[in-house]
Length: 457
Image 1: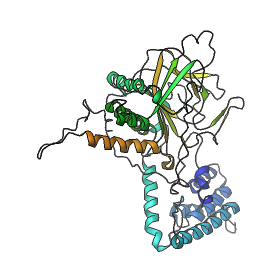
Image 2 (image 1 turned 90 degrees about the vertical axis):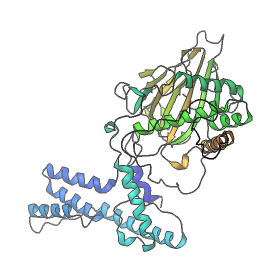
Image 3 (image 1 turned 90 degrees about the horizontal axis):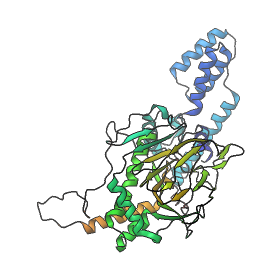
Image 4 (image 1 turned 30 degrees about the horizontal axis):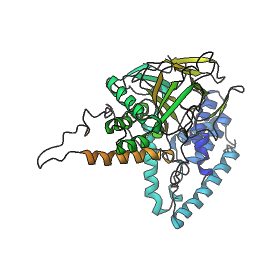
């Protein structure tokens, strides 16, 4: 079953997070067209015959084969590529065995290939197969090239700089995501939590001895709110602000694909007084979020212990009353700075998590810098479990705090703890599918490994 999904890995382009649909047949189709344009009808016919191994009833390709046979002359033997013939033969045998096992022993198989013959699928599984194929079709319906995305439509929020202006790829920052009042409320939450936060395993200076770090996860925030240690509305706002950010990043980078939280962390870093003279280090060294950066080799290796399941990253700034602390992007050499983003209340920086976006943070030399660090994944099996617990706690707490109303009296819909609810705005425009291609192991029920809080912005 694992080998059946290898094609998805091969079909994922560098810097992209989703596979090219129907990769091998479409590749052969393009090759036959290219060879035909170049005047090499023999190789064009070979690619066309190879394509027909996947779709033997394709009328257009059958017409092309007739054309090539006529041009090459009678008696010319046209055969498919031997390696393609062996691949199709082996793949069909694997599918036959897998479908037999699923039918008689149970389990789930999400066939990655739209070319699988209908007659190979057992009758009892055909309906499920059609549903999966339709999900994949809808998933890819709205997802074009990253540079051809639709207009950004969150009211009041502006795209301040895009990839071109930031001298890179798949990077952007938005302004006005939060109001000044909302920033102050979340800052109050961070201050009230104090040393009661979590995420750094008790280490106060995980990245540099010149700064003190404090982290607060969404689950810890809700538990502190339940205990009365912090304001309930402030903890609730943390969840809403991060969800609003997720919707913005999803709308901009992956319309039609659901982005899941991988980790959410309210992070404050404070310059240690008397420790800043002659300082030469960074607040956070240059790194990438889903691969191991090798500046000397100018490579980024997507393998453990890197968080290989991360697809997009974000940081939502809460203040700017400090010195230093700008986020910056570099080339793969980790030295050549390509862009820099100064913090500001309500500013959201978002970018893809791979080697195309190495980044670091300049030293904070005075004051306290706070932000919400966000990581997202397209893989539901790596969704942040603690966040789901936090959302359950929030719903439970909202119900407990909801004032009773008499018959005929409608709830107002306002925030139960007072003030307007900071719900994210609803996007305008076309409806989008949130279905997602199943990855290997997505139905295994395995829980993600313990979340580790490093690579903070």
